[in-house]
Image (cartoon, rainbow, N blue to C red):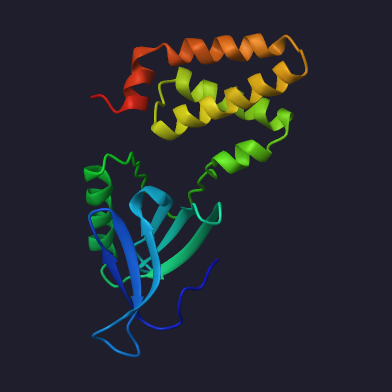
Length: 188
């Protein structure tokens, strides 16, 4: 986890960016310590009890994910402001309330899928195919399904294995569904 500052900072949430300033030396002029567009946010988790948020962002410059924890006194206001701005930018977001003791599955990132061995790709393909068949049509589930299927097609095709046809047909079938199109292209 990247440590931005030990000091108290000022977080500014603009219409399309998140900016963090260290204001300990001069409260009138802060030192810029972090800036990112809201489009770069991969995951934001809010802990209401301990009043912090955990942000994961993708840094285009370094081609890496970064993750950091921010303690915020008015955490619920921050969460609502962040969701409002992301929705106004048409950034697809999902919220899920986690109950104490409940476990949460780790979300697969594009990087996870890229590094995944074919056995894991096939296993995860089945999981996400089942989710889609059962009507769990979140943007995350649909795009992850397509990423996994594409990886399987590329793998089997490169080896002249006929399994690539199975995955290619599955991709075409799912992509052709009207409800999937609505999820992917944000139509209501």
